[in-house]
Length: 402
Image (cartoon, rainbow, N blue to C red; front, side):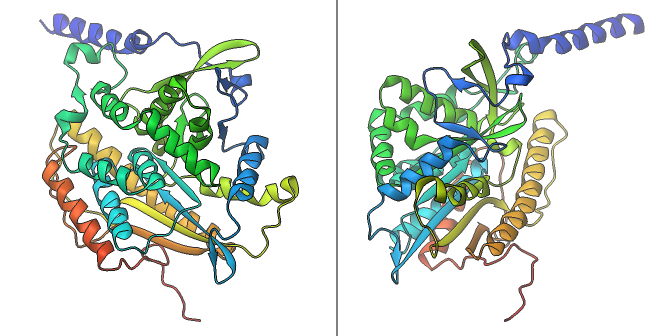
């Protein structure tokens, strides 16, 4: 009997070991060509953070300053550029969209020169970039859905031959409902005004954070751009092992391959904004634009708790994976918050940080708990309406009075 059980166990292990090949037949980019591949039919719309000197990035940023109006971003006669970084937070995103909507309704929110986001933050970044109508749509989404509306759990047999715990079909449909040609036209219009919208993904093969210029993509127009826009948002939200990765067809060395992309939060806690701003600095001689004397107002919206919140974790695979991802994400977010703070202070930027208040006790019962998201949204909205006090430093860092 024991031998029979062991035999069955070995069969299961063998199936699990070989199942990764059943999910998708890979034609991955060879290691020597990683970072050199371009998306089929759509070059010049993304770049890898290991190559911040990308001519495409420099040109895009140079054009953004040329395209803005002379009176745009002027504060007391000085060009002052607000930049917004939005992290990922799954259902916690309800707090972020509530805060941003309340800030907008209060009439004090600036027009952001650059908006960035990854994971669920990519959807919030998109809505914030466009304004009230799209913010209202996203607010409705994050206060009306439940887990069964977004993800579908796979059965045990399917798990042996798939590459994730959940199917993303339902979530992809939600994205399709949001992203259409009309939305891309609005993104392109803002892009032409000199504003920039960036979304981040992780190239799992290359272990690289990839920045996608969504305005450049939207400006191309057409059904193919709509499909690619949706695909990037889905990839940015697809956390490895939880949702399946997204594959992009690329060309390198005269041949076609595929790249495996997942949630931008896999590789970092905060969007790699310093790569963008380094590009902005390096493009001065490249474009002939003099940016001396301009100011940067950096706003970071962390869609997580910046202090531990204890709760009992059920002893099952889904609950443990969910808690592990949550804990790992919060840890990375905290570390990157300090890193960006140091980067900003070194350059004299105005640093502003927001996150879910410590006194908000979570009562989440599932991945997307509708009632909990309504509570989070209301708290974020109320905090903004009352006049949110942005943190001028990461939590735990004591600033010396000068």
